[in-house]
Amino acid sequence: MKPAEISYEHHSSADKSFENLTSAEKYIFSVCGEIIAYKRGRVDNVKLLELRERATDLFTKMRAVNQAEQDDFKLVAEADVLRNEFQEAIDNERTNKYIDIKLDTSGDEDIANRLINELGDSENVEAFFEWFPPNPDDDPFGDVTGIIITRQESTEKFILSFNETFSHKRFASIAHIRAFYSTLDSKNAELKEHEHDGHNITELWLNMRDLSLNQVKEIIGSFMEIVKSNPRTPIEQ
Image 1 (cartoon, rainbow, N blue to C red):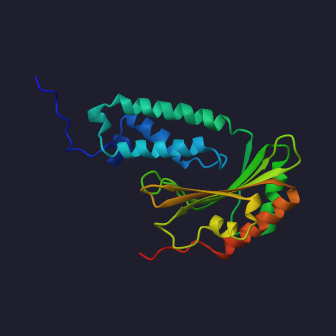
Image 2 (cartoon, rainbow, N blue to C red):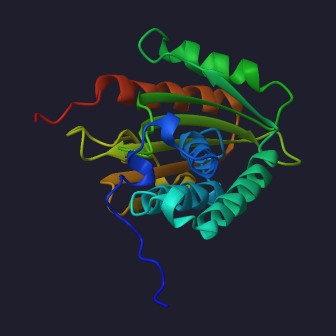
Image 3 (tube, helix red, strand yellow):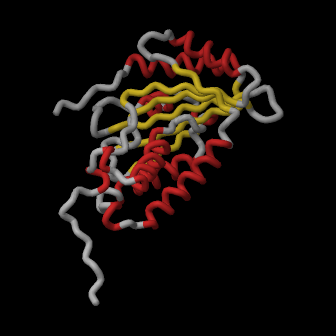
């Protein structure tokens, strides 16, 4: 007897309306969406970056199948692994404070002061500005700029980090971190870049160590001057 053939007459799982999804499909999309949208981890946390890419890949797989017809338990198992690894990763981030700052209504000094004040006795504090949010069906990485202050262990010094996802598909502007890095003494600044293949997204990290709080405040102010004087310029369609 020949094995039953899979029908492709119906839409893939990713094309269905929510009410037509099976419980397994809803579960997989829920896991993918939560991981893709999460942006509160440390900018040097390679594990969170890896999980985001794997969640995006799983979402892409759901475009090629109709889970209700194919009943591919491997995809559910893959979502289980992602969910468990993601929970472990964010559990390690619980000492972070996250604050919401509106870029267009906050002064440069206000942003620096609020971050420093919110740090308190915590290990780190972070804020993000979204030029547009991530969307698993379109731009899974969004376009985001972040600032993170981290307390160095056993010292009175701090690490200041900047993170940026830059969409080449949507914007013709400069990457703020790259422009800011060109103004710094590179001996105390480490720049890393990663290209998200197939998404026209560059992700950048800039880390500076052994800083006093006064230095942190001054550097954040200088970075915000770069950001505000170079707003994202949309590409004309």
